[in-house]
Length: 159
Ligand SMILES: [Ca+2]
Ligand SMILES: [Ca+2]
Image (tube, rainbow, N blue to C red; front, side):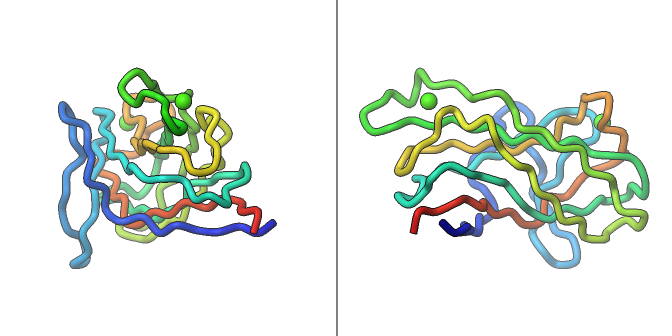
């Protein structure tokens, strides 16, 4: 068994009511997540056929202005197997991680969210994977926008 990674592009699906901002920082496209309103983006893809159980969502963020406090990240999965309805599916309980803001605004912060709530995900499933900053959570204390800069999915593979 080995771990594999999928590098994720800037997502194309966003919260229709409260979308994260798409902006640039240091000439890179980033998604900006508000400090008080929860906003989400989402990726949709087919899970690799070699997937055999372990998933972590990893990435890099930075803060626009904050130099202290924490952000709370949520990753949620909806998985539909072959011949299952997508529209009637719902997201599993969020996988949460609290991340301390770097002491200098703009510094890169690496994070890893180990995901155990996977909506019974199996190989070759259709997946919707939702990322949000749980901005209204009491532990989300950092001020200003959080920039999601990169993202990848790590998973265990049976080959
Ligand atoms: Ca399901
Ligand atoms: Ca907050």
